[in-house]
Image (tube, rainbow, N blue to C red; front, side, top):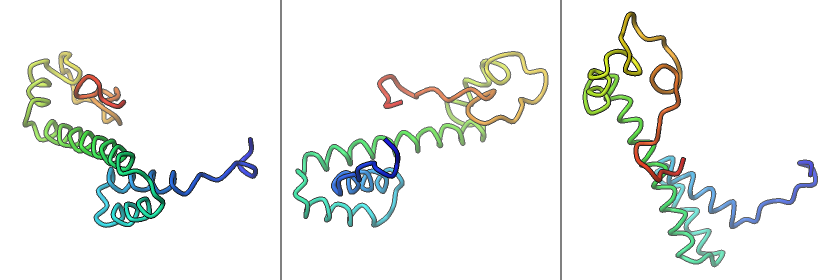
Length: 119
């Protein structure tokens, strides 16, 4: 189906997605506006609460990973201790400075901090 004939999302779906994005992004006031809109539409509180819980999980997991990456760069915390114990980047012998790459150590994608994460 092309974009031209694609059906529009129901306003409640747009409001739920916007609420989740606002919560996950830490927006200071936008979630309250969407919360009021959803309640006016008659969306059950249990569904709103589920969306908020999921968005908070995403926000908290992202914050934790950012903190871990920063702590490793500062040489503090468990991530830095693991890197020191294993030698160079990725646990190998460090012959020279690691390459600047995106993602995790040596360009690999960061792994979830705990099992059962949403990724």
